[in-house]
Length: 611
Image 1 (cartoon, helix red, strand yellow):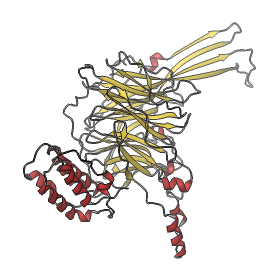
Image 2: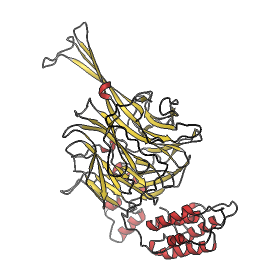
Image 3: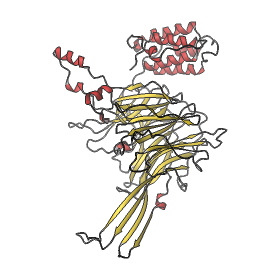
Image 4: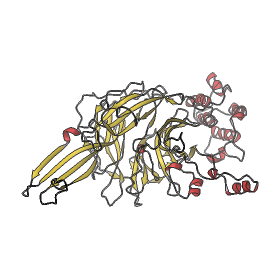
């Protein structure tokens, strides 16, 4: 983790602000590390005095105020950082001429009148873009729209989409989609891209984005657009045929991305590697619109001690901004205490107080199922799940943790030994339009299968609201996801069966929306699987029977809004084809039943629809 000193930072700010000709700037690491120990919040007065002295003799340009805001954030002075950042938005650039003397707002921004923000300080919501259109909510009883099939090989698994606003070249806007698909069972799955300039009526040919001849398969993927209009396809490579990964990232892998800029895709850039792999990740825009990737991994020293990687130990969370094809500097969001070095272990042994064994090993508090956002103060906030500790009478199952920017807070404890593979449908942290945080999750012990909205109040879960649920006491949820929308809104998609069972035949995809005011729309059916299902049979000459059946099972979906506010949805719907053959020529069973066999073939298809 980088150290920094105020003197080095302030002089770098002055040098940047006063430049009138191109110069070579100091490397960023030099600004934060000049051989002096990290400056704590107790040195704030001296730091502000340095900054005041710097800006009193040199023009106060935007870059200087932004640098001060960043440093205040690192000290945990979140409210003052927000004041300084507001000043930075109005300040001129470095070559715009001399600004006037300090005004009242600037003086207020520099005032030393607050203590370090305590852990859990509420973060104000991001400013709502006035260009964000109102949400056009589809009628709950509306007829499902025709679905446009996109993948060629019918082995889709993950998908995401972005709708780009219209311009002169694309008057209808552009729909960008990515999805994983597998050409054959002998090959890994790859990530494919397609685009449409007419809201899904026609599509470009699919382009393979991930084929690097490594043999790695594509897992969970995200599509993100930055403030400059550049598009980022981000994914995780996993071992071929990985079975226990899911969107929550339970399995080790390699994060990679490509950038679409000026109509051309960049090369594949890897953010992690095989030596210290990544586990769970999410992508989000910072307040300035920069695309960021946040992920969990083991610490290098922890992996060196254990000799292998496991999700239960991935307790280092890091963040990197993306600038086109070039990733920025990786920074630490949260990390465990460092393990003692061999020299420290030996010194403690010689001193007669050896370090306990458990302190020599990585702690089993790794985080998967990461989902979160970047707040207005540029800090990362997320929820994740750690293994918990089932030992003893007070042991627990997995723990749902909230990282509030300063510490972990336990929001929920699963009952031990009664967990399920929730890395397939991880909970989501959502910041609504009023600046209030929510946890969206599917409870495992509710009366009725459902997805619920839990407001977070004082580090605890408040009274929940059902978003999508089955009939009273019945049904099953096959999958669900939550997608943040512009303006603090949220869309929740859910595959729901009324009949229930292990392989339900009546599952449909539903979607519900919230404008951020605590009210959810009535779920709208997206699919029409019940009408598409079919069954036929034929008697053979041997007086046997052959039956063919077809049903559908929703798998995953993502939502985006076009510039008119209409939701666009990309989803995976699995077509399950069944064959049942019976014949008296086959040996009968012990119970005298007519012998036969059955076979099912999955064909997960990727569909687009504008609601």
